[in-house]
Length: 287
Image (cartoon, rainbow, N blue to C red; front, side):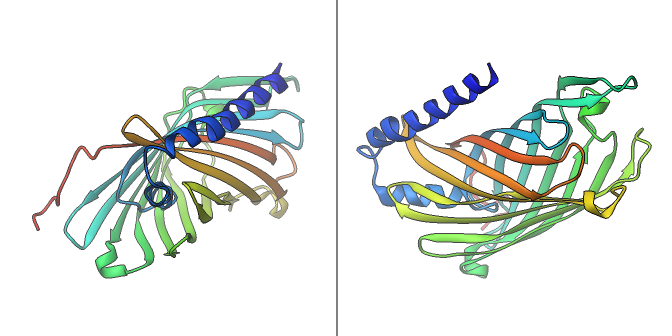
């Protein structure tokens, strides 16, 4: 049943790429579609967007999967002509994860996960040119509906973006580090998430690249369980549905380095990202 579900999803995405994408190419130029794809691939973009992303992780031991559905709005605001405030919340609207109970039996729990909020101050291209620069605090709020779906800790730490914007490509890194500062959980937490990204834009709104997330648990019980290092390949296409551009993306990932138990081995990711009009226009503090 699960295999049929993924087969249907793959067929749906491919159908959207080929059929809807070709129809959208008749309503807008390839250059404008490429610009939208470039903006949506940029963590400190100036456009507003709402991303719905599904991740299906296959674990090494036990041989089960974790399904994670995230809602990720990107809400940049212009502070002045030279500085922007980038707000990137991540709502884990559905987590489905296996666990081992006290009797040693394998069960599954599904519900809402923890919420992440990154806020970055970024210089506009007037100051930074083609460089992608941003820094600010990042937070994790213990909003999980079940203690097995979150970490039960309030967390805070630094975040940043460093990259370069080329004519037909962009690349960079987006690291976030969190330290626990309170909450009912019994364990002290220190963890890092490093997203490295690269996208090449061949034209027509298409993009080919990678954007995996390296996970580091500094307090893992042994060194071999500290790091999850993925490699991946994604294909994206920006289309138009009515007046609004929408980015469709599929990405496959393999984790050659992962924890021994409940470690991520493979991931299949689908994302749909519609662009929305800015609700707050102009500079917050004048020209």
